[in-house]
Image 1: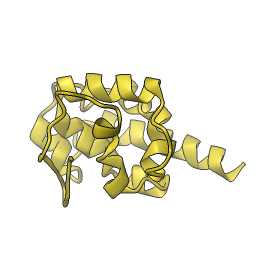
Image 2 (image 1 turned 60 degrees about the vertical axis):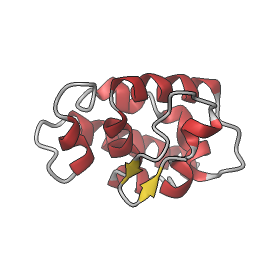
Image 3 (image 1 turned 180 degrees about the vertical axis):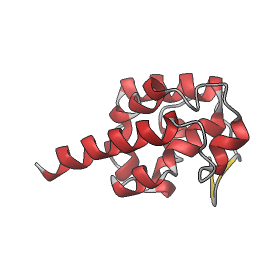
Image 4 (image 1 turned 120 degrees about the vertical axis):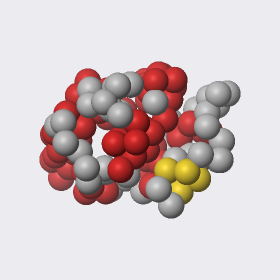
Length: 123
């Protein structure tokens, strides 16, 4: 039951954070500008299938998550970093060290290897 509450809170807060125009507290989103889906609420909520994989590195990444991550990486890798490192993600139990491994675990060939997401590097 608590897991569902965290998921609902995560989605709500993440949608709010990514939908507002002035997101100066998310430097990765600002760097990406307003284009590319950073301010796009559906893009934020579409990362829900990734929650389990972002919390536990042994969890298989669902195909729905991989598809969303691949689409977001094509649009703007900085937006992905903003979502994965947001306070909402942290509150939902997302481990950034594990979250940045999702593109590799999805076998995304054009993932930004070596790209920095805050203090973390995409493998």
